Length: 208
Image: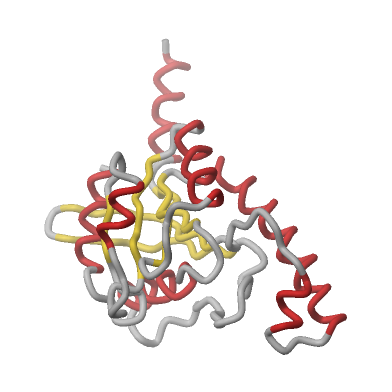
């Protein structure tokens, strides 16, 4: 009986800090959103920020920031923010060459990006809640998005769909909601921070 009691104590100790994972296709704005959240919590002088680029697969390995605290009124969550490489079904070095990269550099980036996708998938087991970040200016009905969300559901993960880039004129949150009506969805702008509070409210709902 005593052993069982301490097992419960250890469980709650482990769950003092949750893991919030950012997943989605390349260039959806995951790293930009991660940076915005970090700066919002730690201030503009936050030392840890993730690199971003207009070229796909800038993030090629899982990156993690621990000991973040989100407080709103009487609610408080301690969490680690996990930024993952973009999920893709095919990564061709020729696509990077078209963006101006040298052939050898493009091949290396493609190799690292492929490894990054594998690492991202493995990390799903370690996160408590997943922010599926989608570009609201792009048709959300894709093999990558459907497969990703299907895998998360199969693993019984808490899911929040984030329709990013609502600051752009051709963004449509409704199209994403139409394709994925069964999951909580929040439209945000990772660049401007618009609707960040609504995202936090949904995170509290999922993790409290």
